[in-house]
Structure formats: structure tokens, C-alpha cells
Amino acid sequence: MQGVSSIITAIIAFVLTSISGVALIPFLRRLKFGQTIKEIGPSWHKNKQGTPTMGGFMFIFGIIGAVIIGYFLMAKELSSQSVQNARLFGGLGMALGMGFIGFVDDYIKVVKKQNLGLKARQKTLLQLLVIIIYLTALYLAGDTSTIVLIPFAGQLNLGWFYYPLVGIAIYFLVNAVNLTDGVDGLATSVTFVVGLGFMIICNILGYAGMSILALALAAGCLGFLIWNFHPAKVFMGDTGSMFLGGLVVALGMGIGFPVILVLIGIIYIIEALSVVLQVISFKMTGKRIFKMSPIHHHFEMSGWSEVKIVVVFSAITALFALIAILASYLVIRI
View 1 (spheres, one colour):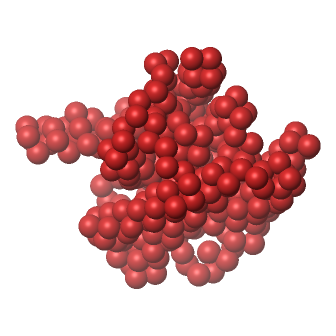
View 2 (spheres, helix red, strand yellow):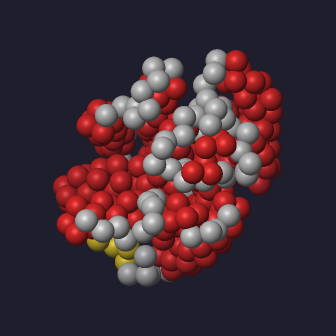
């Protein structure tokens, strides 16, 4: 039954996401919800001015619909797994919370014509609130383990240090996924690979509920790529990228293996670190390490096409996803 449910889940996520673009993109155009391209970006991005944004609603709708249907198809198998269910629906709730923050940010940029959106302090406080609610909900649902699995090593019990460390990691990774969304199809393609990788890992570790979420994520991203691949007809906006960030983190947390995100989410981490290093270098020395950050813009400024960046970054993700899959397989044998 799980195989049939998985296929149905994937089809639903893909179809709902891809078809919703037929109605949503013209609707966003009529509302004039077009992307404003910053002056500091690559000059050739100016031709993207006015491309509809907030397209992330397409895969938010598709993924949530697919997960709910997939869950009910496997209700008998999953109904008794209370902690898994808390991780599944708690993760969805956390992702929606992050997506809502992204929507507010997009709304301020597009409707209020304030290009910077939410202030950094405002966004941080809202994200921390969502993270606290998420971790509290998991704890109250009985997910009280503070043991962290370390790839190729074993287990480490962090005690109460677990919660602040995990909270910081969630905050970092959600924003790292957001930073990866800067080239047509990049965040979508990378996250598609991440979703497939997590689907395999979930099956190896025996997390059927999280496998549904991973598969819906991959299929939703594939459906969105129809509209988002270069030249993009719609952008996901912070609405979509922060929702994706929440889901990616929810998958790592949901299988009790958040450290695996260091491997499978390597591109997100590199993107975020490139920004951090650029800022530190400029403030301390007045010089920049990269031509532009995040690092995908560095490669753009070096002459790489957007399609090449997407292909190379996705291939790197696939390689590290394979390493993460191997690490997961070894974990169950330690």
C-alpha cells in the first residue's frame, strides 16, 4: 500500500502545483504583484523586472494537499505513530509559519513598494517565535529525545543544549534556502534533489510519514519548475523560499537526524556562508572575497549562465545527497 500511496502523493503534488500556475500567474499579473529587481544585482537581471512573484503559493497548495491525501491513504499504518505524526504535521505547520513570514515580506515589497520588506530584526523575531512554537509542540507531543545522530560516527546526547542549538540551526537553514533563491530555477531544482534524497533516507530509516512529505516536496518542486525554469515565468518569492526552508528543516528533524542537513543541504550552507564571509571580509578589510554574494551571483558575474549554475549546483547536491544516504544506511548498522 505504501508504494501506491507514494505514487498517488507524487502525482497529486505535481499536478496541483503545475496546474495552479495556469490560474495563479495571470492573477498575480492582474494584481501587479511583480518582482522589483534591486539595483545592486547583476545588470542583466533588469529584464526580469515585473515577473510575477509569490508563486510559491503554487507548491504550498500542491504539497499540503498531497501530504494530507497521502497521509489518509496510509492512515492505518501511521495513526499509531504519535511522535512521527507530530513531527510530520508540526513540520508542516512550521513551514507554513515561515511561509507566512515570507508572504508578509513579499507583500511589503510588492504592495507597499518598500523594496527591503521586513526589517531584519522583525523577520528574525518572527522566525524565532515560529521555531519556539515548533520545538515546544514537538516536546509536548512526546518528542523529548535530545540525542543527535552524527553521520559516520554514532550518537551524541546534547541534553538541554539540544534546543538552542537546533533552534539556531533551523533559523540558519531556513534563511540559507531563502538566499539560494536568486537564479531562475535554482532553489527549486536544488530542493527537488534534496526532496528525492530525503525520500530515500526516510525509507532507509523507516519513517513512512516523513517519506510522504519528502516525496510531496520533490514532486511539488518539479511541478513548479515548469513555470520557474529559465526564463522564469514566475518567482516563488520569500513566500515560497521560506516555506521550502521550513520543509527541508522539518525533514531533517522529522527523521531524528538534523545533522544530515549539513550534507544534503550543502548548497544552502555554502550560499549562506558566502554572504557571511563577504560581509565579514568587507567590514574588516574593505575588500570583497566574491564578485557578488550569494555565491551563485559570483558565478554569474564570472560568465556562467543561469542554466549552468542550476545544473552544477543541483549535481553537487545530488553527490552530497548520495553521501547522506550512505551515512543514513550506516547509522542503522552502528
